[in-house]
Image (tube, rainbow, N blue to C red; front, side, top):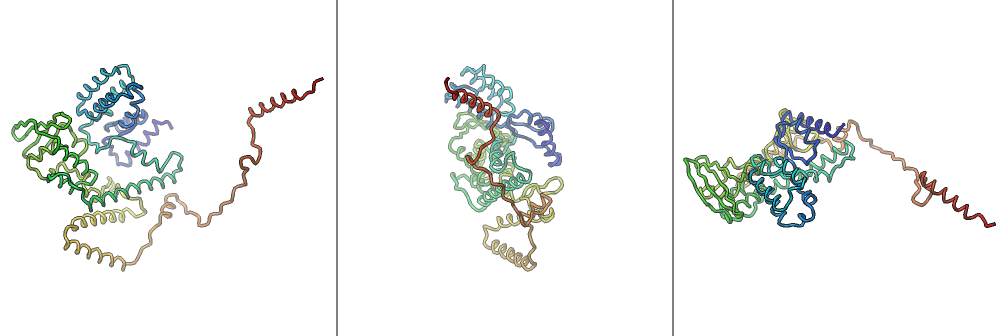
Length: 424
C-alpha cells in the first residue's frame, strides 16, 4: 500500500471512530501524502503546518551570512510571530526580503506562497488552545513505541504511555484543586482567575494581568451608543483597539488572543479594570481551562465515555464509576472550605465504605487477564525454554569467507608460489 493510500485509510478509520465528526483543525509537518489525504477525507477541516518543523530549517536555507546575522533573526521572528493581520505580515515579510537581499531564495519563496497554512496571523480567529507544534506529542510517544514493534507490544506500550499522561494530569489537577499560586497584584480579577483556572492556565492569565498593570495605557476612547472603542498602547508601542459593549460586557481586541488561545489579553483586562469589573465575565472563562473541567465526562454519539483508562469493566459499570468519581470530586471541592460540610461528607463516605465492606469483595480481573483477553488465548503457566546451541565466539573458529575474499586469497597464493620457485 502506497503512503498516500495508507493515510487515506487511516483518516477514514479515524472519521468512522468519531461517528463521522471531522476535526476542525489538523496540524502536521509538510508531508505531501498527508496533505492529499486530509484534503480528500476532511475537505472542511483546516490544515495547519507545524511552525517548529519549518523554522528548524531556516538557518540551513538562508545561508551562512544570514544564519549568523542577529538582526535578520530578530526581524524574521518578529514578522512570523508578532504579525496580527495578514496585511501586516506581508508588509514586514517583503521589507525583510528586500533589506537582506533574499529575493532569489527559492525556499523563502515557497514558504511565502504557503503562508496561509503556517503563519499565525492567518489563524487568529481559529481557536488553537496554545498548540503551536506537532512534534511535542511525537517526542512523547517516541519514548514508548517504534515502528518495529509487534501489534500486541505496541498496544501494551501505547496503554502505558496513556496511563503516564493520565497520571501526570491527575497530579496537576490535584495541585490545582488543593493549592493556590501566589498573587502578584492587588487586582480582584487576578484573584478570580486564580480561583477558576488551573495552575498552568492561570500562569498565562497572570502574565497578562501583570503586563496590563505595568505596560498598558489608554490612548483614546470613542463612545457610540452602547459600544465603547478604546485604544490601548503596550510595551511594544503598538496600539490595539478594544471594542467593549457596556451592556453585555462583551469585548473584542484586535490582537485576537482570546479567539486563538481562549484567555483574555492584557488589553481587555485594562478595559475591564477601568469598567470596575472585579471578575472575568463568564463568557470569557472557557470551561476547558477551569479546575472542574476534568470532573465532567465526555461521551461519543453511542454514549460511550471518550476518555479514561482502559479497563475490562463493562460499559455500564465504567460509566457509573466515572460519574461517581466526578461527583465525589465536585462534592469534595464544594465542602472543603466549611468544617460542618466536611464533617458531614466524611461521615457519609465512611458509612458508605463500611456498607460496601459488608457486601463482600469481588475478584478483579488482573492486567495479565486483560492482555489474554486482547490476544485471544491464555498465557502458559509453565514455560520450557531450550537453551540455544553453543555458538562460536569471536576468534574461536574460521568464518565463512565471501567470494571476493576467496579470489584475493587465491591470487596471493599464486604470487607466493611464484616467489618460492628456486633460481636455476
